[in-house]
Length: 350
Image 1 (cartoon, rainbow, N blue to C red):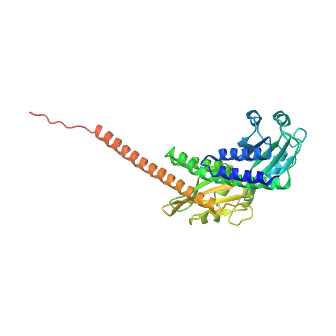
Image 2 (cartoon, helix red, strand yellow; image 1 turned 90 degrees about the horizontal axis):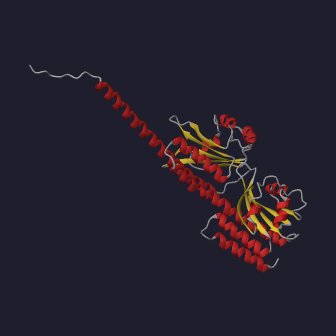
Image 3 (cartoon, rainbow, N blue to C red; image 1 turned 180 degrees about the vertical axis):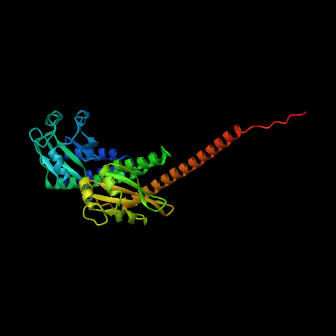
């Protein structure tokens, strides 16, 4: 690989990531730079779905819409191997059993396929797939460059996920002042935006006990078991800091490690819901695979927690005002009914 091509790719990739455009648009420019400088047929970015069963399209270049719409990508062995963290090369897509759609690849003119995992602190969140129009292997220098571009792309994707939650949470909480609706919207947004295993919200009651108020993505059995005593990790978060647990199956701060294993939970992040420097509850995020949250991500989650706490307080205040209004209306009706049936005295002049 010529050095000038490597420099050109990094220059174009750097420019793409600095543009004020959406993450899919940035990745399309990255895919374009790779395809044009490496003489490829196409490049495709896919992300692992929230339930880990599918690879969902996010951006591509050089591939037809018909090929992109060929069907759900869920059983390719090359992808499964890549999801374990390894780069996988398929030299002949027409005969390799790891290819799920050999006819569609042949129709698209794809001969070889390189699948590169998108790794974020131990967790594979997706893949970058490079397609060639002729049988080809990649030199070590090319693979090093491709891995570097994949790392840059992963960073952009993860940062986008976390920042998008802020906007999504704000949209969700503005849609309703009903507390139950607000809480359910928040746990769903966080789970889907982070592609997490699940999410819960626990709020402090009048006796300062944590009460499970909303959950998404987790089984009833796990919630019934873990909710009775979630462990010291959740309680530590009430002090105002994010508590991250890399291995829920072996960390003593998790009260029910066996249930976490059965539920498919690997890591957890407990986020304090702070309102005016006072914790009112904890938002818990659970991941499928081990994930070490960075300091920037934890700080962003604290900001998200503050937004959630504000929305929760607003909903609680609305509910309290609504109850007072209903009480006043009830009292008025009682007063009205009482005096409506009270006999009216009339003075008769003689």
